[in-house]
Image (tube, rainbow, N blue to C red; front, side, top):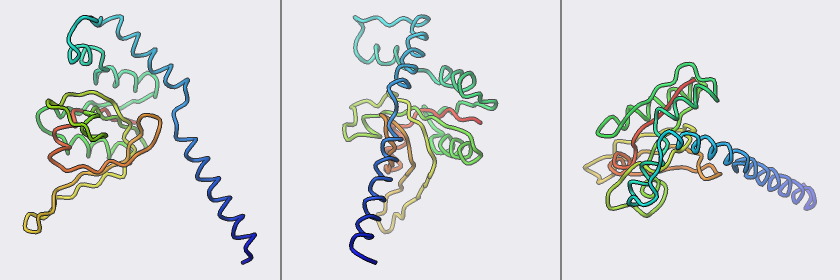
Length: 183
């Protein structure tokens, strides 16, 4: 293989990667549609601007029944279910979401973004952000004798990009609140 053909192949590969990266970003129109949906729901549940920050965040947060409704109306989901994990059931909720994705459906998860997606865990975890679950779910139990930690991993789409979440199981259980899945 000549130097020029090798450079052409590398350039072509690099350009293909860049094109895929651009396609993963959320178009501005999608953000506009989502914010319009959120604002229409706010007409029913008003938000008091003088309330404490945590109350404003919870008041303005999209609830699971709203996500399920949008999934039915906009995505045409026939079998849409909410899997709650506020006090327990985190892993079964994630596994149900994974099953929906594998069956050709969709899934969203409500998480504490600061703790699950960032390195800024809040003093008191609270549901703060919806993410799109893409699948590739792996749950390892760990090995106590070897001091391996149990770990949960999965692919998501959020903030205009795809990312991999690798998190300790105990942290996952703190920061995972609900899943809405369907097909």
